[in-house]
Length: 269
Image (cartoon, rainbow, N blue to C red; front, side):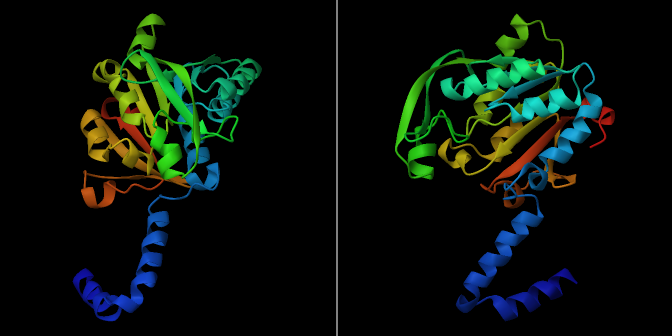
C-alpha cells in the first residue's frame, strides 16, 4: 500500500512546478512530528512534560542548565516545592532576574555556564539586547545564524561532574539543557555522572544552533547509549525508536527527552 501511495504521489507531484507545495508539505509534516512548535510552552510540549515528570520528582534533584530568567525552574518549584533545583545562567544581566526568581521560589541560582571543562569562555548576545534567550558561547549563533551584531562577556564555566562532586549529589532526577548549541559539551562535562547511572531524565533542545557547533544528533545518541529518546508533542511524548539519520538529523527546533533505560519503569512518559 505504501509503495502504491508513493508511486501515486510521485506521478502527481514529482515535478518542478510543485516545489513550493512539496516544501509546504515538508514543513507541516515536521510540525506533526514534534518539530518547529516553538510558539509557546504548551505547543512545544514542555508544559505537558513538566506535568508528567514532576510526579516522579518528590525530593529529587533538578539541574537547569541555561536557565535564562528561570521560567522552567520556577514552574517545577511551583509544582513540586520539595524538589531541589539548581539553575545555571552565565549571562550577567539575565542572571539578576533569575536570582530574583530563585529567591522567590526557593531554589539555587548559579551564575555560570556548563561545559566539558572548567574555565572561562566568552558569551555572545545581541548588541542591542540586555539579555536574550539566544545568548550563546558560539559567536556565529548571533552573527551568522541570526544575522546581528554581537557583544560579549567573559563568563565562568563549570562541569556537571564537578558540581555533582562538590555538592555530594547522589542522583539527578532531571537534567535540562538549553544552551544554544552547547548541549553536547554540557553532556560531555556530565559523562561521569551519566556513566555512573545517576542521571534519570535529560531534556534538551536540538536545532539549527547545532549546525554552528557542528554537532550531529548521532554524537549525542552515542554519548547517551543507555538512554531511550523521545520527541515532545503538545500533550505526549513519541518514541524516536532506533537511530536513523533521515528522521533524527533534522536541524530544526525540537524538544528531546532522553530517559535512562535502567529507571524507565519509574516514569510514566
